[in-house]
Image (tube, rainbow, N blue to C red; front, side):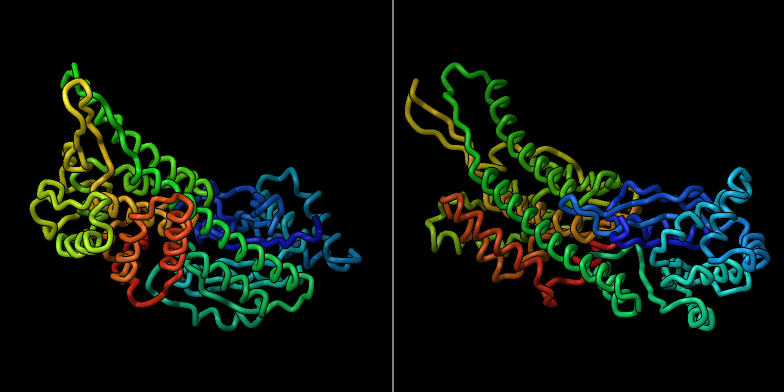
Length: 473
């Protein structure tokens, strides 16, 4: 256990300690509250990857009687051979005194000799109230860093300059709510660069390598499953004999067709959530998942404009004979793809209607044979719905993989439409429609998976600012 990297998060109440732990532990189950003093006990949150603990994060309450604790330390230092014996004596002496419960909780963690991360709000000035707790931390003689959790636009970091040089190795800014994977890795790299103790340097370096490898694995897992699920969706067909079928029987068959697609899509979202460690996504992210393929919003929000669809349809027609179900059905394009929409507001409300589209707007519906041998075939989906489903599934991977586990705010989905055009540039959209025509499953999944990963890792300006706004909380 002594070889495991330990990081203790300390600071005043309601400064973001639990949120910091949540995002570094990749755990949205850490209790986070806006109320001051909600954390009363220390808790350990290990980050475990492939049955190996990468590091242990300790969430601690704020000091309650730091002045009295500092007085105790200074009055009794001469009576003990080492500082840690003194702290153990304090714990034993006051363990039944509820007034010192939070201070004891902090001391129990610090005697484990962790790296100390002290969280401060950069909008608040430094004042003498911090002196006692920082003196206590200093006496433990541990590697300590000051982290400014940006909570307001006001910047008072300059008032902390003197304390930074006296009590901390260095200071950083880290916004726990908007932090993504790169932010976390860069933070650990900064610790590795600044820290002096060799053992901690080695542990940090090892942790960074494990996290980088695991992120790559999660990304490959997500896009591989996306490609597999998408292949099943776009190749889904169903057929039935119309002889003696009532209208209600036909409607049931059509509903079963759409429900099959919905279930494949839903299973994919649950798989991605689990893979990235999310168990408590807010209601608006849940609502994003639940937009139904047979609602008017689907292609308007996730698909492409009529102009782009015509170009893609021409590309298909010129290269594959139009075999993947290209259609410019006016009903499925809602008459005008240019009308403004605002499907999500902060409270999760919707301005568009949720009217359900008929089966012929979604899929190709054709017949073969005559009389008793006449068979109706449903599927595959029409091109605009294929593209919309791919955009939605891809966007969900982007959203989840870049979302901080500490973010409990309402998902802020800006006014938008034709998301496919914002997620994929023209070249990649053209490649996608060519991949759609690949019938061999293994080749299809391999080619699409490679394209999606490259698109994700592409940091060019073609990744529009509007997409970055969409991913912000």
